[in-house]
Amino acid sequence: MKNSQSGFTYPLTLCLLILFLIFFSIHVEQLLTERKMVHETGTILQEEYYFLSAVKKMENLFQSVGAIPLKGTLVYQKGNMGYQAETPAGYVQKVNFTLTLYSGETAYGIGYFETRTKKLIKWIEMN
Image (cartoon, rainbow, N blue to C red; front, side):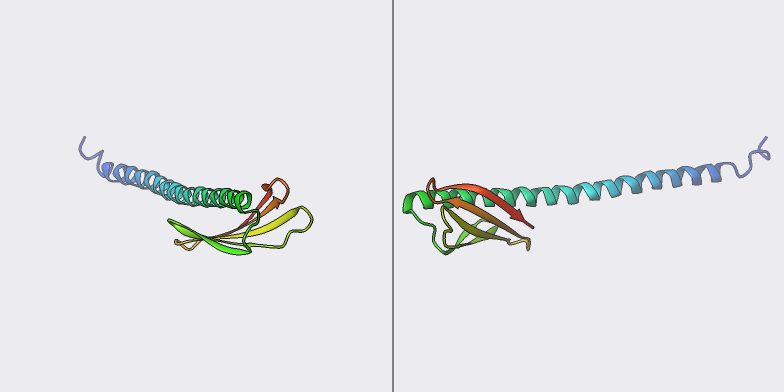
């Protein structure tokens, strides 16, 4: 009986090892992809939060002072938000926002403020 099973365990072990390695490599690739997505999602949420915060500060400044300064910078914990206001055209004033995170990402946004209500009426985000 020993002679008839000669060499059976080596191919079986090799097949099991190959199956395990294929399964493992697929899961490692999924893990790396998920980590990248989590990092990118965090960066996107941070950018959105900084843009929202900047727009709220601009609205409050616009309502309290009556005008938006032509240029300025807002400093945040993980980046800087620069803004540049254009002269109003009719009842609409355009403000260009540039967010530069310390991690190297840069995002741009354009806000249109109505000068009568002193509120944001349109937002365009460009990446």
